[in-house]
Image (cartoon, rainbow, N blue to C red; front, side, top):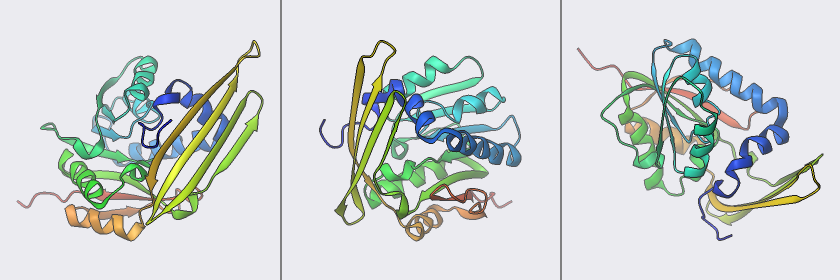
Length: 245
């Protein structure tokens, strides 16, 4: 599979299975903490845009809680999985990169979590994506964003029961890495299915991201480091200032 094919498209149908097995309780605990952060800070009738929504890890439970949610992701295959799981709630999907998102309907909350920033490979894309988040919000709206630390850029493997997962992360220079993944899943009848993925990601220093967030107009509302310690990412709530009266 060529580098820079659309990330996760080749194994979208087993994405949830792989992550639930690979990270087990941590995966669910991270989801629950993230949901609680949102619920504790905005009203249940708020409008939320979820950038990098994937298969709906956050979008679906938020919509079921009554939030009006728009799930944005550039991978059609991932959004197809989201649609299969969606049963009720106010949830719309848009297949688009974060940096290309525009809307006339404003939101109260924007989400950019679970390493979404890694897929932005240059300064122009980063600035455009953060600007899109800013423009999508109402005055006084908030952005929940995570900035992955450099420590997560390493390979790992998982092998248990009928699932084998091998990930390599190779440095290419100038904070660019090649991410490669091989997944093997054994079915009940003993047959093995293989999935491969390979694409480019980038490490963004926290200072660079914050500088760009301030540059597009955000202010720092809350540093959630202690709440998300151990995740390998720095979580922040950024705020779009209220309009002057």
